[in-house]
Length: 67
Image 1: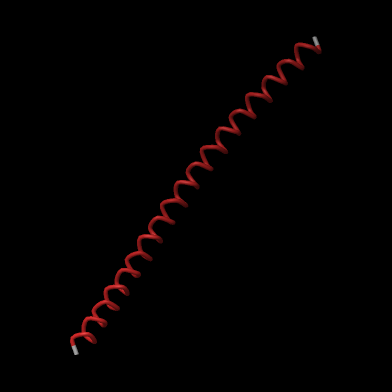
Image 2 (image 1 turned 180 degrees about the vertical axis):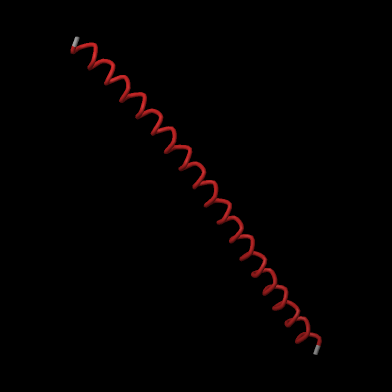
């Protein structure tokens, strides 16, 4: 009888442990997605700013050459 109770307790602990691991994994995934989205937005903004600068430089150079 002791072995059955101990086995059931072990199974219950493993079940709880798996549920906690699943919850931790989901939280980690959400944090990672948020970090990636933030980094992507910052990168897009930086690329847009750089592109705008390059376009302005090209237009200024084109105007100077045309004169």
